[in-house]
Image 1 (spheres, rainbow, N blue to C red):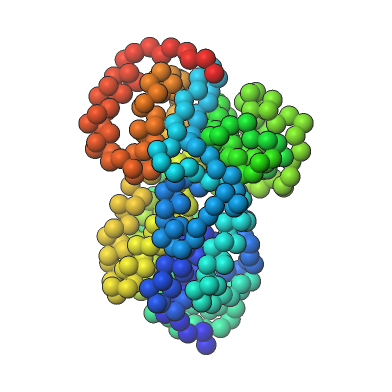
Image 2: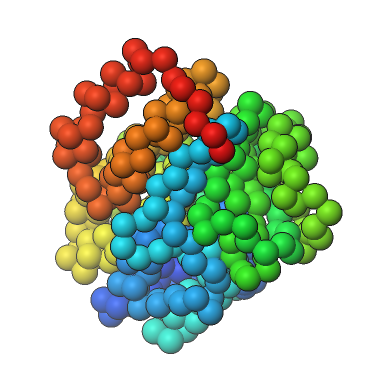
Length: 375
């Protein structure tokens, strides 16, 4: 029989972060994961500054040797371009495999026990089995993604999927042409360009259509297509779904959910990893106090702002005329977009931003005819 204080089902970044945070509190942790490390996933591979801060609390210090720094976000829909530099530290473009390896190394340093390549059986009314072995635990943590079996097994499924889109990712050998993460907007979807090395970029596309392919999205983005034309692809094409999900509860009894199993935001926000890291830190505090109710109570405050920003940004995806107007306003008022980014990263409160900018921004968005700004 496997015995531990906390059994974590799922060895992705959220599960590894939860294991690290719990071990830092002295909790004996076992991770069970069906795959073997390092584990890849289709994503934009850009860590925002707030992700850095959460990782440092977990004892994971990433540097330029782990990837490629970027200095902000650029929204591009020619002839419009709106740029928002970060205030303070930069972000980091890092291969998902590299990030996973660094988190695994930190877990091993702290004495987390692993069961890689181990199937986990969670069936209603039956005990949890890890590779056919029963497991005795004080806490069961579901970190098994947006299609979480632990969530279904524990009766925490009640909630709502607010959005669902479909993405693809590939790496190209080309020198990064920008010091920003570029978000290119088209009628078929968006493409995110993240510099991850001196001669490599990650390109991820996301679309509302399940039949859309990366080539189809790029066909509507001629400026980006021109930059990568003829450049060699250095990774296989990977696909994934991205959702915005809200749950009524994220814990019950001695079971808790973290990462995409607990709540998720569309990839357009760039905040998926940061949410998982912050949830892991909160969960560890609740376990140390012996009260998962504390985790349930504070979990909504972690996801509220990113999900609100997700709804706003998806409006730009859904309505081209509104997107053109919004990007025109952001391009003409260079201070507004950086302040919105600071709010998004919780560096400035939403109430403070709305007090200073809300009325004027709403007036510009809905009453003033947009003007083109050269890209």
